[in-house]
Image 1 (tube, helix red, strand yellow):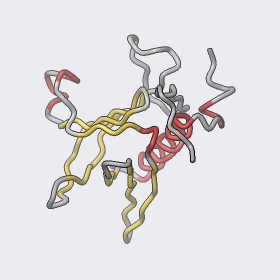
Image 2 (tube, helix red, strand yellow):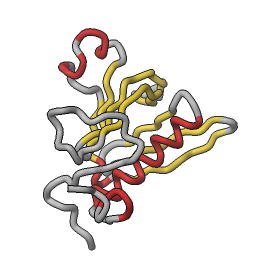
Image 3 (cartoon, one colour):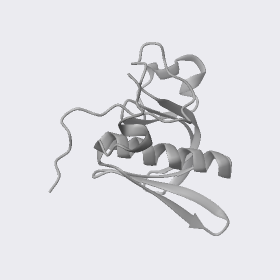
Image 4 (tube, helix red, strand yellow):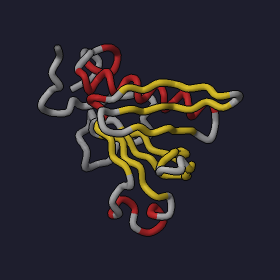
Length: 142
């Protein structure tokens, strides 16, 4: 039996888009628009999603207009105990992000963006577990 680390591991990803000046220089960040399936009716909503510092946050897209991240996220998942699984239904590709408490179905606007998010999550989860690899250990720069 493996125990989760007591502190979140820093993540790194070659495809991260920007690093905020207030974050540690090694902390990666990926953000963008994703469709998120949520609620009892499993409706798809277009949301602004941010992955940073070992967590994934989902914001209402309208909240990004004036207040940036002052508004509370509508979903938050710690990546350290997550699994990510690409799902294909017909001609569409989805991403299932599952934690011990929550599950989100995600869809990007394009196949390329979907692949980019899939790779990011895979690397981020591995780094959060401390599994090493290209983004978790020796190449994290410091």
